Length: 222
Image (cartoon, rainbow, N blue to C red):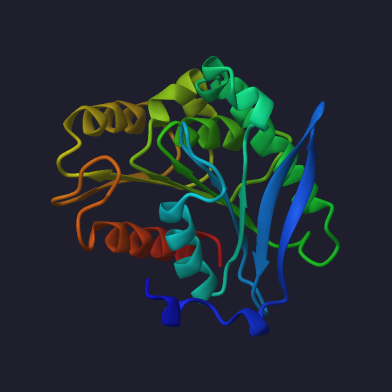
């Protein structure tokens, strides 16, 4: 998305850095709310990434342009990131998503809005495990280049309609997504983006993934 196409900041209801209590720690995030939002999409980034991920920011901008609020946040504190094992601790990452979703439910101006999860890479596994948690009500999930298989047995408990987006050249991950799709009883669609590798760095591929995500949330969140 070109800079000129990004949401007009002066028109946003909220566009701010936030700090959210997540169990024993506090995590940093960025909350963006457009006028008359259709819902809110919470982003769960992949290993080694953060709320400053340019790919997730790109997708978030597309969603805000379509009337969705977005919350990009760091699943781990800087100290926790120093321990590489935490990056792949799906249970820990999912618990952070649950805490953050509960925090959104406590915000009076947006508490009534439906919530979606957007997970990338390992974040997709965390998003699906969190979506299966009875403490939160998640209306839709999108995975981009994700590892939904990492959600394990929780896949069978997910009730939210789920879209799995995978690059056409990401052969191993395609297979893992197919396995995850078979393990789910909820509505689940697999979309393969031709010409894309794992990070969707090829021209036009990330835009295609963002459009697929937007349309999924429009269908299931709005």
